[in-house]
Length: 308
Image (cartoon, rainbow, N blue to C red; front, side):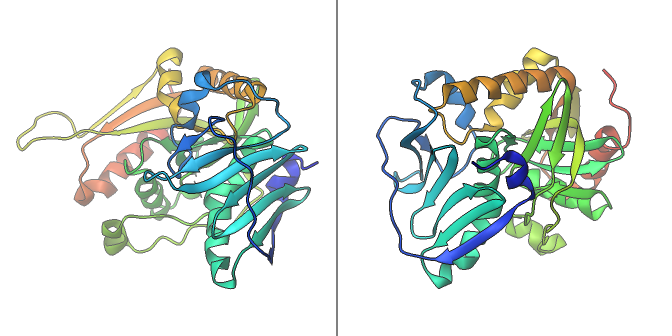
């Protein structure tokens, strides 16, 4: 049976093969959209299903087509991405069956940004829809809705000399109030305007390291009118109850049918918001001022002690 340590330190093994299908049962943890974002928000509405079940959770695009199917069989997480690859967790890494030679690049990209983080969550870690960098006070994870600027902020902070640690999904473990963010291979996914201004942002191939989680920042954009006198950056630390409501919707769940795993996930996030500084960061989107904004956020969260 795969272990969390084996997956964290393992690698991707792949071979060409024919495409099969995972049997899916309608109504068991269906999740809309090809993203982990928002999956945890519906935990309370899922019917209990035994953890060892061939039933699959389906991830669907906005048009209803199947993007991926996930399930746990005999303690092993599996993910099928139609047209690309089938992945299965095993001791020492993940085995991928790629359906065509031209899909190898896409299969590797999916493994990094989706498959590996979700399998780690299935096997005991937590996965947060966020990007992260590491500074003197540890790792800071930037979470928020799609398109809010998580990747851009982490990339700009990396350009300032901080260690870029994750993009799109932050994998962390912890207990008794001590949390660590695990470094996994990733590539920045930047908007065309960001690439045009600052470059492509290649990402990082390092893995196996872990850094203490110092803070989580929930990013929100604020639309401003011409002449608006409101500040372009408001940073406020949240009390635990408010922090839980702000962070929990960005948690990722591999399979919503496992009620016991979902309970442990919620307990971990309750522990997280009690032990780690959680901030709401509201800012005015302005690409021209983005570097200055990143500098101010770094000064507040990455170089100074986190005060209550």
